[in-house]
Image (tube, rainbow, N blue to C red; front, side):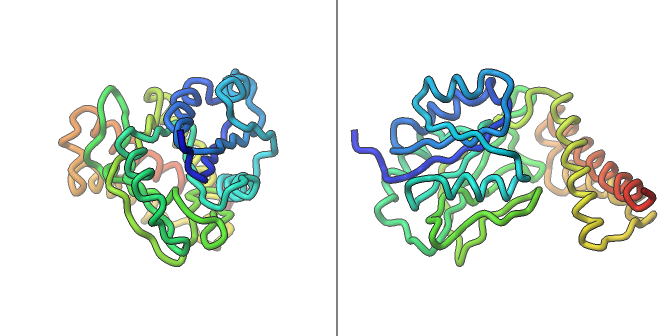
Length: 250
């Protein structure tokens, strides 16, 4: 089997429920799989080692900086950067294989991500297609060092058509915990950027976010899951502004 000169890079911490599925989706077409682990206490590292991945242990530097560091540890210039809760679909694998020799080094490539949550693939609410830049040549494109909402910086972006599967949350509690974590990081970034707390935004933006996700972006057509997603989106915005006020009073 001819493997592509392509390094899959995955950052992990306590991903034993996801990592085997993720690794299985790339092991038969990439000639390097690099797992950068930041202190897992479960079976993540053991599973990755058994499945033939190169595992590197290192400190957590924030999302962007950690992905930047992990990418620079890869042996190949072409990088496929995916998260442990993601999976390259068979269709996307074939698209990457068919197009690889024609990829342009100065372009980065966005993959359309589709998320599975509460027993269904989410089609609306701003979740699909959720294009993510994940395939790039590291001499021309690279992750920024943002602590949250990290992005690949590139000269230009082109788009694939087949899906990157995303198993986003285990359950509602997991979503709430993630909202709590991310809202704190966003509030800290807002403070660093000089953003001031606003009562107007605090009182209106959570409702506006719900309306955007549920009605304007048609989350209503995802049924129960769409409603849960929209309510949690509004709740996350509420937490962000509440935590910004808390930081401003500290």
